[in-house]
Image (cartoon, rainbow, N blue to C red; front, side):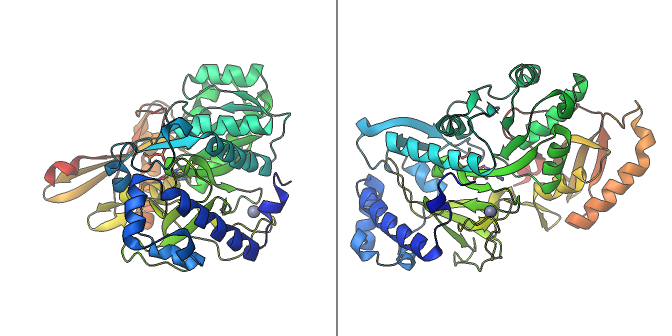
Length: 434
Ligand code: ADP
Ligand code: ZN
């Protein structure tokens, strides 16, 4: 059941001792990076002035902007000869940040992924189809190395080309997939178009959903349609990529691997820590990274820590689903909301298909919100007008979730734009109004 029995079930006191030791080591390494050399000197921080985990709070936060300022090598803590790999963020919110790894960083990262996969029941006998982007993005190669370390057979299919994905699944009897949730939803329709029922025609049993916010409703749909158990996988390139936090068989919160990262949860406005159970911004410190240690990185991702231990026996704390990034928050008519709230509401209707788009405009001095919703192909008879009641019901349920009344437009199945990478859910035309 455990990939690394000792580490996964280590008691909290020993875990904290380990974290302190690794933190001191990380600071020693960070002192070699141009950015940290200056910063730590200025703050009077050396490994031996960090005497407890609380001392971590003396170190200023790192942000995406600082990483961008220090682009490309300001955070590099080893000579360039030691670096064997570069990755970058997807650049969802601006210029991408770059991350460098030594050979040991790559091994450590892979072993975290192997741990995640093993935890959810993957073994050497499995066939793993990795439908995440290969290349600078961390989702593809990151998982690939982990699955190889575990010993599974890896099919590095990458994303897109849905027909070929289905062919590979069928011919090589794929049992495990790794996929972006919005693409998984899209595949449900593709299976129907190909006349395939994955539950009967394929051998799939496990799916990893990661890289973008998604709701419990999305998980349930994927599980029902693919005939799998689906697990939430969280990571960010600044902290390697996938393998930072992962669901265990309980499917109730993601364990953050605290032997490799220190997790803090802060109020993004006051920057003070929040209590367990309260939502805040996740802040991470690398504990094993050689090439590019990062201390107290503000992820901008919002989630809460579970206050209670997990019945699975792992002692590493769990976080909730990610609600979104602080910058994903939409303010419409003065009301705050996150796209995932809309996703959750829409997918609670079986009549709703697998794609939607939020469009924000400024009309008559007021915000206007349109939600375009694909209806499911099973429901679609060729005339959207007959679905008047559905439209009304969706509008009502959205109003109770987001507290404003959007204009709901039902559209034909498969008519909205699709992406192979992270889904674009919002088009905000108000920006021109400043
Ligand atoms: P970028 O920050 O440019 O999107 P990354 O590829 O590093 O580039 O993406 C990491 C981000 O993706 C995370 O900070 C988070 O916002 C999002 N993310 C990753 N996994 C999940 C997940 N399971 N649930 C929600 N969001 C996720
Ligand atoms: Zn657990």
